[in-house]
Length: 604
Ligand code: M6R
Image 1 (tube, rainbow, N blue to C red):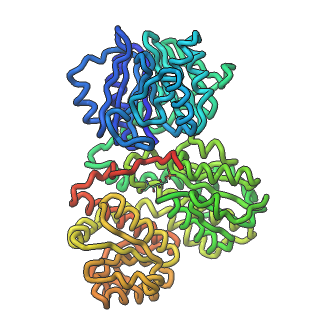
Image 2 (tube, rainbow, N blue to C red; image 1 turned 60 degrees about the horizontal axis):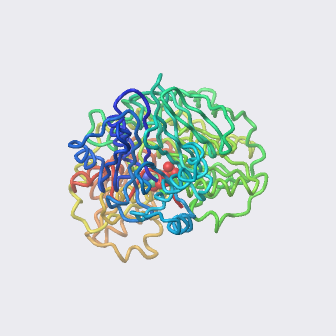
Image 3 (cartoon, helix red, strand yellow; image 1 turned 30 degrees about the vertical axis):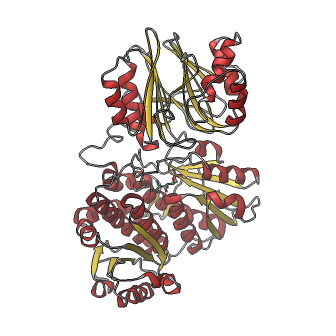
């Protein structure tokens, strides 16, 4: 998972490439590089480290030209060195390539090319691509034919952009890794994701697997792998550049936490009517889910926690549902039949593990649905149906606003499936829908009054951080711990509160603060579990409404508005997002780009 940017037009390519790379850095930040077509050939600059280091490197060299490609990398083959950074070139330096994905047969291709005199300078799988193109050029093929032939040899997944010396053209292809084309008059962009070029255009074409494009100053030619023309219509994205910028905030994560009132309002707009108790999910007429007798939800990381939240909401509504880690699905998937609905939950819609589970479900004949934030994503195209969470771009690697929107969408979906499949309107819909409508204001109020920064400071020196919750508080405990460890690098664990006494209690000391989440589901039991930890010295921070009994017992308190028990966990989660953020900030961590991680994981 890496970020690709390409530019063809009249303007200066370098500036566009560097802007694009900065906008894409959330996809990988081990190393970065650019290649620009200048008067005398292809000039390449690449560096290990972040885009800023590349910017320093290019500041005192001439990289003028109006055609170029750039890349920001999350390492898979080979460590993040200058040599392994993209773009990669062939022996003659006449071909430059950037790539996202995995070339599974690169070892055979490399050996084959070595036997024919090609010399390699990196450990990457990508480097075989420019050498293959060069091989076919030497064999007498035209530029386009050599590119196509090289692509034809690749097994695995790829989004590839290539340029050849002396040509005012970019060649690109996609299979299994995202690639979009941006169009603005006579200026054209290629990128892994729309925010890369959002400053320049909102007119985009999402490429599909098997698409090959040739982009020159006059236009874009879309073809399939055989070279036959295909039609791809531009779409207008409704994200604006400001949404993709940091605005007044120091970090994207803080901005995105504060965007939750708006992103949730967008998620529910037109989808609920508290007065008539109607839930309208785009394109899913009442009765759509009548045949569904079991739901399997597949996802990874934060999206898995949202999926778990959704599975519990479905269970509570009387529908048989299981949340499964997408990367385990190929081994542990329960049986499916025509009446099974498999829901792939993925912010990006590009997570390789989740796509693999989705494809397996498609092959096995289940009905499939994806809940995603990205309209042109692979998951949206490969699932039978898609529900969009409308959260706007999320740039911080730590998922925040998308979790809240996923969980609310799954809560609505649970009610709809229950109504269709079980033929009954759950009893609590009367209070649930108005409370969902009030969530944006509730989060707004919570954000204004949160004491999360003080709590983060007070407990920062602890050894380990525990998060406990019951029922719908359990996925929130898992998510609270994931967020905390991901951006602070401190040890954190989430538990079902009742599990604490079955082992983890052995770890509890005065150095292990316990964040206890109260959602109104058997809170007395959760309080007892928290007290069991407190008795052994652990400070307890209760996350609950002001008038909750836990406030008297706990050492500290993070307040949440009093809402339906199906939603309380989501408010608690916002407080925990803030605790993680402020703790990471005090520790001086690179909050938006935590070490070793990237926003979208497109390898299994
Ligand atoms: O794009 P997805 O929602 O499929 O991503 C899945 C996980 O990689 C992701 O949720 C990850 O755990 C978060 N970025 C962590 O904050």
